[in-house]
Amino acid sequence: MEFLWLLLPVAAFSGWWVADRSAGRRSRPGAKGSLSADYFKGINYLLNEQPDKAIDVFIKVLEVDQNTAETHLALGNLYRRRGEVDRAIRIHQNLLARVGAGDTQRFEALLELAQDHLSAGLLDRAEGLFRELVEGGHYKVQALRQLVDIYEQEKDWDKAISASRRLTAETGLQLAPIIAHYRCEKAEQAKRADALDQAMSEIQKALRADPDCIRALLLEGDIYVMEADFARAATVFKQLVKKDPDYLPEVVERLRVCHRATGISAALIPYFSALLEQHGGITVTLNLVELIQHESGIEEAIRFITEHLQKRPTVRGFDRLLDLEKELEDRPAPSYLGIFKELTTQLIEERAIYRCDHCGYSAKSLHWKCPGCKNWNTIKPIQGVQDE
Ligand SMILES: [Zn+2]
Image (cartoon, rainbow, N blue to C red; front, top):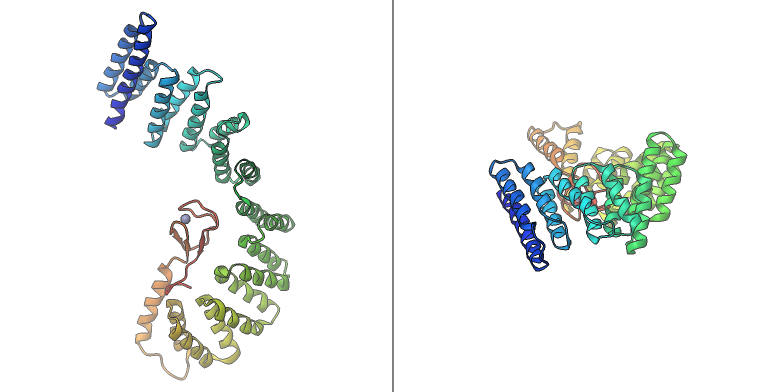
């Protein structure tokens, strides 16, 4: 804090000094005297711990010209970075009021003021200022990036789509995979409102923007399930696995629902076996165990999972084996099974299931945009002893 209090009078002093020197050269009398009075008034406010009054005095003292405008901007930014957004806003607003309409500093001050409002959570005001910059053709890329961020926060997906398109036009950045997510957000809204046709139309637009959009495929399959079109849903889910096997755990249960509904669960055994062979994964294994138990009995299921655990031990696999052992009717379960079961249950409850490839953020549910690093498409199911 003290550092900033010192910076203010120093900045004011250096501004005055430069002004005074040039005034001296041009024989402009009087500048020094009026500055000194205000300057010491400001110092007094500081000494009396009245920082807001001191700021007002010092920004008045700091004449706005090519040299001191930079000081205003730097001071404002310092305040914003320290979280003192109100003060940053006052400084930037003061600067804006004092620069000419065509000055380059005006647009810099606008950009800073917009960022102040964004930091203060005043999204509407920030949006207005960023739009003014874009329309005026100043700091266009920075302003468009911030607008996209604001529209995401406001969940205004149509505006997020059009701002992203403009950003692509300006920078050549490939934003289609993110635009596909905005379409999926719209599809999810429609799905929640039971407007399935509208949801499907957004999903098709998402897939046109990004044919590899896993989220769009999941949604498409889910909507076919809601419409009881299980065959089409299963086709979509299988297509998804081909595109990105990392998301296999998301699809396995859904495929079982489709096959159960059409009474052909057994047909999944060869399909899941082939997936297990190719990609591994405990979710597929556990689903196979259930199918095998249903088709061939508990002994066969135990044999299958034991064999799997020998090759690749996982907590969830061991937990299922304990369940199966307990279910065996012809022999009483040993007492230590209960202790193991408690342990595995706790491990499974505490584990994170998804992790961000980019920042390592872990979560129990699937986020399409990482809450840690704010990237889209970076969170995937975790592979490991405790997980897949
Ligand atoms: Zn992340």
